[in-house]
Image 1 (tube, rainbow, N blue to C red):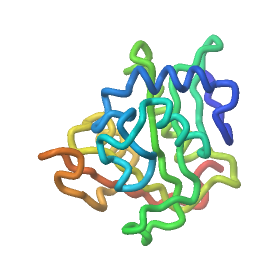
Image 2: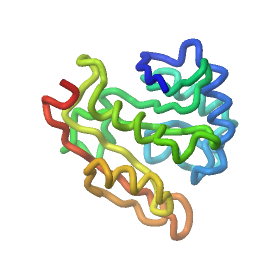
Image 3: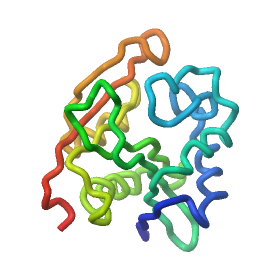
Image 4: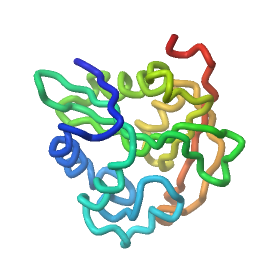
Length: 180
């Protein structure tokens, strides 16, 4: 498996769109109903206009791609120098907006490899002192991944995504020597 950093989606546009479509309904709310990729208000549930709208919102972000045999098997996109306004104490930060792996490649370490690269092996110009991430309280895989990499749970918005479904924010301080 090859991992690659890119400042944009580039040649992988169609494959990224296909992966987003395949995982759409696994997210709460679905990606296709979101109005953006970063703000608290973008999880409204009805404002999005489909997966293509969500894909368009990703285009101004940086990407990490996992590929094998010329096939994209996983993608991580993130906002460079973005921190939610209520978490300014973790600024400047990188903010992952999507981590998605093709179903047939799950439990093969693809997501972990993408996240490890994101945390510790970005090009020097893209390394920042913090990473802030969000998920929801029922996303066990995401919570385990953040715990595995030593993130702290720093903020929760109760009932934000649906009754009983809370938005959970994680943060991690990175060493200046990570990735060297």
